[in-house]
Length: 141
Image (cartoon, rainbow, N blue to C red):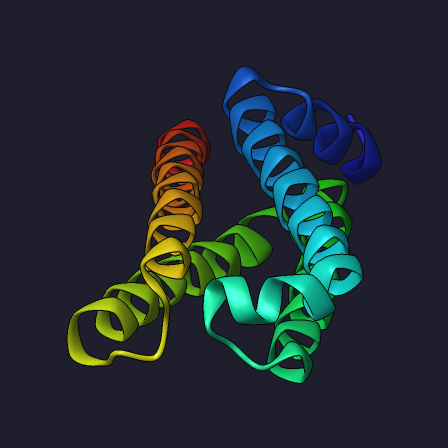
């Protein structure tokens, strides 16, 4: 069996499917969140308690992250490494969001609730991707 055939076969195993699906779903959520935040920044700023330009910067970061996730999820070569980067990014988001809510008074109450909801979703993606990585690691070991 050639290397290409092996890579294609590995990429289609159920373990890879879980990991790839979690990354694509994360990309969809991140991309849609980024687009929504960018388009709604002028109205969201006072509702959330964050300057519109900060929201636009976050939106751009989310859209770049979404593109990276799609690229990594579709690549046999980058799937695992990209997933590790994605999990790290998601965990850092969760830590940063919790710290922002607990240790500052930057956000409005509505902003804190919105951030908590988004952060819960991000945490679920981190867990799904971690489970996918563990399964891929066991399959290849």
